[in-house]
Amino acid sequence: MKLYIKYMVSLRCKMMVKEELKKLGLKYATVDLGVVEVMENITIDQRNQLRKNLLLSGLELLEDKKSILIEKIKNVITEMIHYSDELPKVNYSDYICEKLGYDYTYLANTFSEVKGVTIQQYIIIHKIEKVKELLLYDELTLSEIAHKLHYSSVAHLSNQFKKITGLTPTFYKQVKEKRKRNLEDL
Image (cartoon, rainbow, N blue to C red; front, side, top):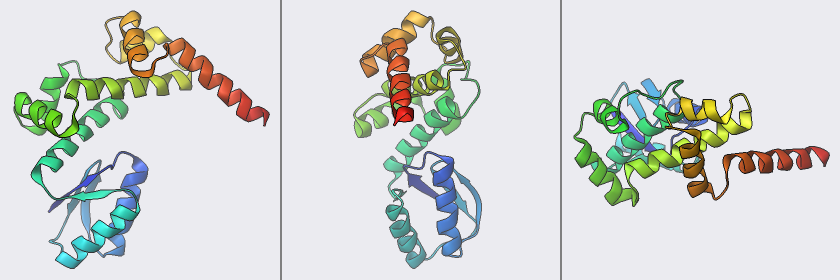
């Protein structure tokens, strides 16, 4: 039996969910971002207790099909951008359709209707978050980051970054470094 969980975005979230399942005596096959495969049927009482416990941790057990689909889309995007070493070479729309087994128009319309942004806008926001992360690690040049995240050029990355954050990537990095030094001086 599969359970779908909203706001499950990190390894820490996975650990919390595993702990809650153990507390309830539920055996699971897998715990991935947004989805848990429980090896047995769960009772209404167990489901209600799991729902309450997850809410205390900032997570939410999903019940309706549309919410579950939105979480699946978000999880595919999060995994694609934040947890894979290389972004897919195919169009993101093709990648998402392949992963979820739905027509892209249906996915895009449902996502936009529920989230108020397009899948493409959501991907851009996550790519910019990844750029921020990579800038702070200071292991790659801006050119290498642009290549890694499949931007056509550094200028394209910089324009998108500024549009989303209001700052250029270089200025963002300088501000973060200055804040870090100020905190170290305290």
